[in-house]
Length: 228
Image (cartoon, rainbow, N blue to C red):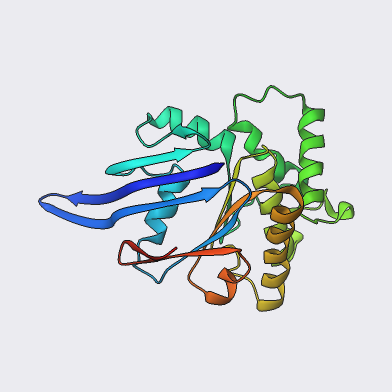
């Protein structure tokens, strides 16, 4: 089953009389349970593509089908609802609250997912399960995130992405702020989530050695797919 189908996705940005064409007809499928890297240099269009995949931007033309639903022409509110329910994000900059505990940071997505009517205890249990899946040690669940190492922080960010049980994990340069040893640990965490739990993961990167952890690599260059 296709988790994602992109069909002739184009994206233009306009400013006054100037139009900049960024994506020039992107088409590909990603199966449920795949671990795919999308790789490209700066200016290739991969950030724009990532924003479309994450429902943070809409295409100028084309269709984006996510988990069987065409989401490309939905309203902002509808896209926000699907984004909260179906997509987990892991960013390079972590985006954790530094003066908040690990457990509370992982519970943050429940604020935005209005469809989940869970008690505080149920939310805590979901957060603990996500932290365990991300390989974060139980004896540090109540630590402040500001007291963690970079690798530990990113594992918390992965757990936060998992807590709503999304159909897709979208990781944008997740090892960009980490040393090589810590990067390896984080990327192997993604591999385990994919292989043991069947998570569909898209990894955005400009580095060949990072993309090598995925099972398939889609290369974008100058707004078109050069290898799929």
